[in-house]
Length: 235
Image (tube, rainbow, N blue to C red; front, side, top):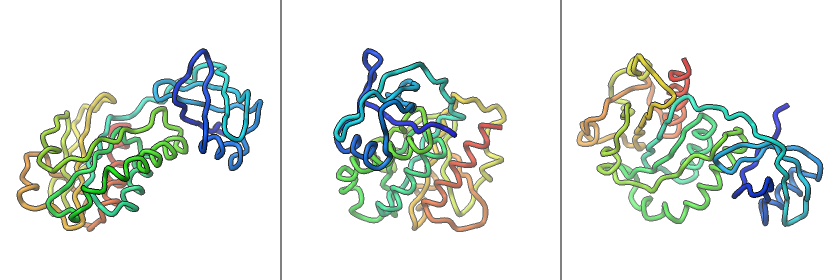
């Protein structure tokens, strides 16, 4: 059985600790006890560690040795047109499980008005979702949450692969992938809002790709496309 993995702020002198509410969750909910072994990560390296103290407000780990990293298949950035926030959290959770390296919220022409004004207030909550999901998925690192961008800013980003997911047509995503695929490749995947792209956005210069004939909600399209990208670069 795989060991649980926890993220810590830092590892210093072969020690690490978790405090406050997170420590309470470990001791009260997960029943972490002294002498038990877990994996910990400071978002750079993963270690095998033993619990040396387990109090209500503080859990201390002693590092036993390094854990071999699990290399990513591809460096995928998911640029998601803003949707209702409970659905955005679902995208963050499932995208983390699927290996997304970075999430960037995007304000598209047909995104619901006003969502951009509330993004900054949700950041702390979204970052917590990312940490919890990364622990559950045993990721080596927590995905990055970028600042939200307007559509015109987002499409200026550069990468080896820049795909705009379009329900109205394009190259099937499995056929659009380059013949030579490396783990170091940066892939940008731009997913539209519920109302779809405007003609202006559709002609932004990115390669248009499609998942098929089905009409998908934004969160479904994000998860389906991320899974396909991960599988393509794994093959």
